[in-house]
Image (cartoon, rainbow, N blue to C red; front, side):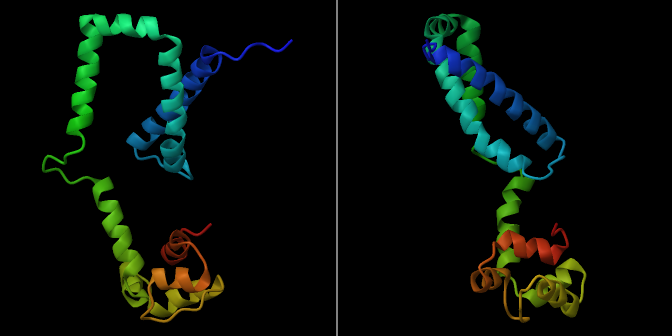
Length: 166
């Protein structure tokens, strides 16, 4: 006879496993050791952590309510909610993640001739790299143009141009 599936039977292991994944990838990202799909895995698998945590709270609602009655329980939740709210604002600080999207957009829409200068290679070298991968291009075109015309991902084209294509 199959064991009955309870919230606790899936929520606790999901919370533990996803916590280990989030903690491991988060610590590595903190130290800027981001390799492969680490950031993508961290972002997308965080939903498993959220689902597990919600299930864990549901399965342990009485102890959860008890923690909310205690001063430290209320204070810890209040502190983290304040930090969450405050994190939405930049407070005058400019961070790398704030710059990533505008820089990426500038690179995607810049003409290839400008990207050659940015990458420290000649325009002929850049065009040759693209041609080796089956991508025909002209100086006035952008990465966005190449992606649309050749049916490739913009990040793939940038990887070829910047020489990080595997």
